[in-house]
Image (cartoon, rainbow, N blue to C red; front, side, top):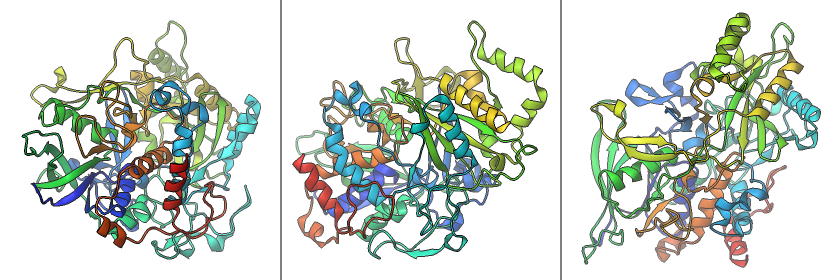
Length: 596
């Protein structure tokens, strides 16, 4: 086929998809981005997550918000849905993993110089996403700092780097901001006036429900904004259901002659329409629960991509993650409002493999405490099932149990502790039909085998930190019910399943994201991360995708030359990037990478 509808179709508009869309347009590709979720304006986000129809994504039930929750027998996953992907509802936090992560086997099996390869692209992403170090410290942050001091790791306490526009002149750590600067108009502070107009953060705490104040640096305000400026088309509410290579002149369906994509447009149970579209190349960036199940279906059920590596779906990780909740007692600390601030503000490093962050929701967003029910903190004891300990605690302490399980007022009185570890543990995603599906079709199923490094659902250091926190505040600590009853951890950071490598024998893709066995078919999202990071993965997904895109040659020189590159204003205060000046920093990053 000599003429395609598009040169490259990007499936998904999260961190990998947004980078891909922008960089492909800069290389002269005609780009289409397909996103199954909605496109949101600031006023579309829920004022409170009690408005589940505007907060959760379950379109078959009429719920069309930006947060999707998947419950399985092995784990529970929260992830974004909408133009901007996870950036719409994540906690804004961007951190570079510790050096030891890149010096561990999952990464060393591929290259021994990942820090050097990715350094320019981390720096570039830190500017594109507009990072600044947080200076807001609420009572929860001060309490976490005290816990760290008592644990002997007080020097590890730090505030985080966040992708949002902090109030102007709020530069003193722990100081109160000037009221007049909250929510103030700032024009475009990042891209020399060529980007969208922005407003300062007002510290409402609603980052993970959806920012209604135009302060959060979601992907539609940077990467996707410039991709559209360059001519990329974004189609929301469009789900890819089939991928089929077009046969070349020799009859081979290896991607060299392009692909036919089947798209289902619309949401809900009725009114959906299907159509097909052709493309020279395809970039899958739909996240682990989007890209991996789609490819498994194409390989094992539809059999349109039979040559994808058998490593597809192997070693899917949770960032070795757990969440706990801790709160203050209103009768003991009546004036404290924990909901003020940004979503994630500070963290500690209590041991070599663990980081713990303070996470908050804005006032009235108490529904988060029942989306995944809380139960009183439940320890593990040798020879006693954890669920038995939980039931015993409930019987002995009914008032505490009712207080913990009551969600009303929790956003003002409590915070979450996000625990992440570098420990290697994983499951696998496979395409099969479980016995309990009865007459339904094959689907993706999380699987764990006897010799696997099993997912953790109990973290002694997390239990200890939560106990110490509540000893200081006089409040109650809680675990999540599914973790205690079923041993199923909750994660917001699912990774792996399509690891980078040197051949189909041990990996799914190469450095440029291209799938072994097929031409012009790429995966670029959290699926390609080979090991737990121990930090929020968004910055690493950006850097890996920037690195992969830089390896692609220009596709159409005439169109590429017509594109105006993204130019930056000088960095705002407290930005960690090595690139502090203005100008075309993407060019600088590629040059620096080529010199390494």
